Image 1 (cartoon, rainbow, N blue to C red):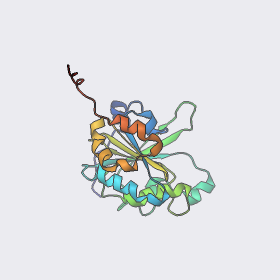
Image 2 (cartoon, rainbow, N blue to C red):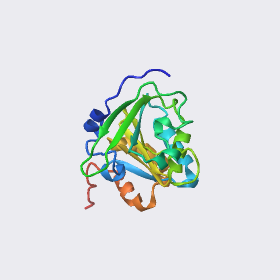
Image 3 (cartoon, rainbow, N blue to C red):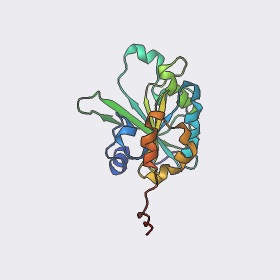
Image 4 (cartoon, rainbow, N blue to C red):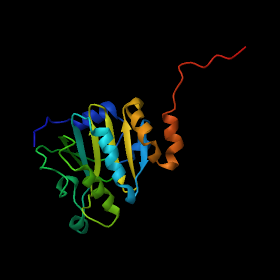
Length: 207
């Protein structure tokens, strides 16, 4: 696997998504985003969204959020970077940082800069969906995919849904126009309002 340059994840988040905590709800934390309805029978939607957002990305940052597991979980669940069948080859460079949020469970973030071709996104999303369902592999990690150039973050939180947030609304406009039918219904009004055109001036009244 081609060795990629290191990536300063904390600095990137502070510079472009300074109110976003990996331990929380991306869609509710950030004003520029879309929440998509996935569902266990429509996991392929996640792959289609990924391919649309990241197909032209120069590279992407794959982030694994992991908490301390007990022995029973360790037998059936795998951290992202140790899950069989996800990576074409073992990532050459892994970076990590320990995070200790106030009044929350500490966790570790581990990430690598990769090409979107270096891992099997469909298998990864299936592993996330399997966390609450039957089937293997089961990925225990919170998984985030970042396009550092477009400043987009994608997070499938479980088999029910997937969030995409961006630094600027125009970055997400095309994905909304192409996949708006998959927007989660109970958030549809809020999301459609975000993409409603804002007139530069009010229309003149007729005399």
